[in-house]
Amino acid sequence: MYTYLNKIRYYNAIASCVLGGISLAGGSGSPLSPFIGAYILTLIQDILILLGVNPYYQWVVTGMILAGAALTRGVRFSK
Image 1 (tube, rainbow, N blue to C red):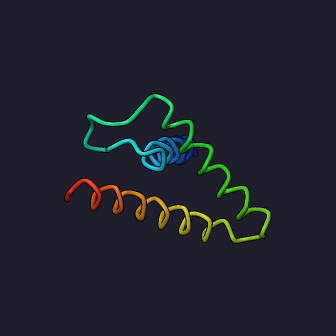
Image 2: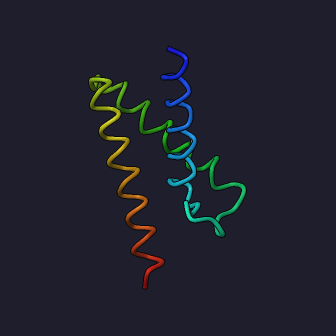
């Protein structure tokens, strides 16, 4: 049980940083970025809860948004 909860915390922390614009490779991002990412992530999760979306699909939607944010950041910096 505790290992599962820790994985959720790590996932939310990494997702907040990526959504805030911090590079996973390091070297870029501001200290305010994770707070902005956490706000966006919490807002998305709250909206999905209010819409009555199944918790499994909430993780899927959050993962797709995280993947999209990571891909757009990678494409933006590869040019």
